[in-house]
Length: 365
Image (cartoon, rainbow, N blue to C red; front, top):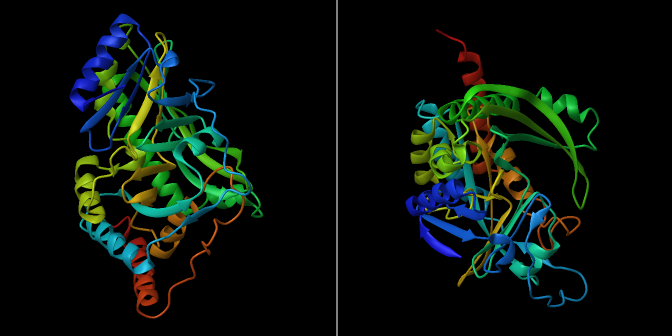
């Protein structure tokens, strides 16, 4: 495994694609660091699964006996609200239409990153020893026979809720957020391909997690590439980054808002990784992400914020995304957050009032 600058990474991807040599890559959100691995199926510096393909962790150490423990220490609502208000101020100024706000949550578990990788089942899993593990459901870009496609995921609801499909498809905030991301990614694909179209818009998949079934709303956007695309693979990926679903629109102004609100780099969280097998290319977004450092283990999670977002609902969503796919129920010691009262509740009501005022003003000249 080579750790290189992002620019060097993209150059290596161009060279590997031109030679039709298989490689694995990863790049961080800030486009400052990249990981590159030639001949990834026979190497064991990093471990991955992309769809049905991957390599194997050589160590088969026994998993912890008994029940797996997993306990997040969620930041208090008032700390999240401060970040939310920074984002909302940028939205109110018109600097952004959609911004992805994320948090870093300390966790305690009797599992190692290797254990989590071995136990997780997801379309895109990656384990970098001593650094991080992710089990992501989200496609970044796929290329097969000159067809490039992306499938942004925006909108999730429990399948157990009566009329869940109708509720999620008619939710105003979710619909607006989804439309913004589809438009952003359609524009992104237009830079690297031609004949771009929205092949499927807001289709619903039923997915099973360890605890329940959920409905996930996605769209498919596709375009056509020139025959020499493998030799330009690095340049194409660079032109699409950072991932629109984890940044926002418009990108440059939204990234400034994110930096102001989050106050620390994301690193590889919400970056991307992928596999070129010599013919086709497949990549995923680095979400459902756990990192390890001298300070312990941390779970990264977040969600999209629009002018119609309610801070308490967004805080709950961030909490609900902190999970291990093989651990059932609410994590140990992690009660579902209670709705805030007093000053914080007043701020939440103020946010709802701002939303109502914005809805009334929408469509004016």
